[in-house]
Length: 296
Image (cartoon, rainbow, N blue to C red; front, side, top):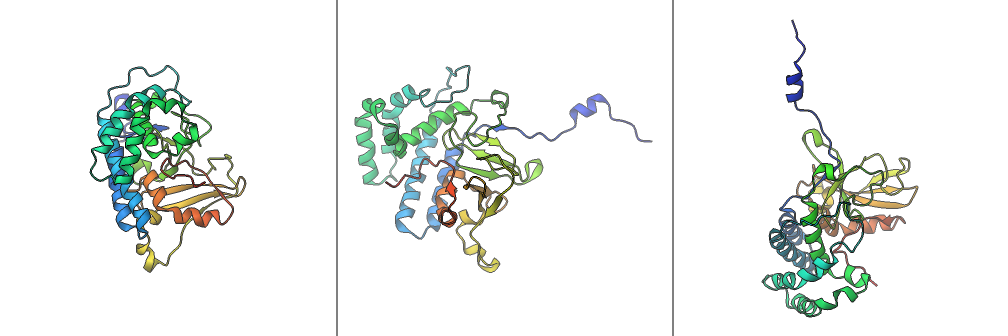
């Protein structure tokens, strides 16, 4: 005869939980550095290969600098949604960050000159126009470290679910891409990834993250015959573009079941061929990558 479980047994039994917010792990930059290095080895374009190797060295320094950050104790009672919260910390820590970068032997001489100039002019940081800050990968890198140090301290309950899912619920930045999880209870769940504070947050796969509509959506990818699929760069094997015919925007997906080591920032840069394909169909790219420097 079957008996009903006791209240204690019910409480002890594992149950499925889908968190809205996932804080960044402490090794986020170390894993990104390794991914950039691996992607650089696959790259055929020598100039782009050099840039991916440069970013690998930069992420190594980010990892070291993140480990040196003290616990941020002055977290405001409201989640910050503007660019000013860490401005003082950015200016204060820029000289030390530049010094840490200069100690990395993998950085080329051209990069060293840029970093030395930035360190010399650190006092004028507040006077720099926003566009200049956005196009400076060294400043972007330090901002990532400081925001990540903050967001990594947050618990799930600190970040309530919001209706608008395109932008990070922690810092307000536009998501760089989506990651589709693989395995266990989380299999096939979509999490958007923040390029600034490295937080992740859940979003339904059935809706466009720009206009929140369900109709007109489709996944697009660079196709290859099955026999030749393994010849595709690893970033493209798991990459898709989710396009929306209603708002004419697209954002990338990265399927971890097809590329378990995919990093939203690194793999985004290594899969620009997909952006070219979708751009030719008159869709506008969504997703901010701090290392995708704008061309004027």
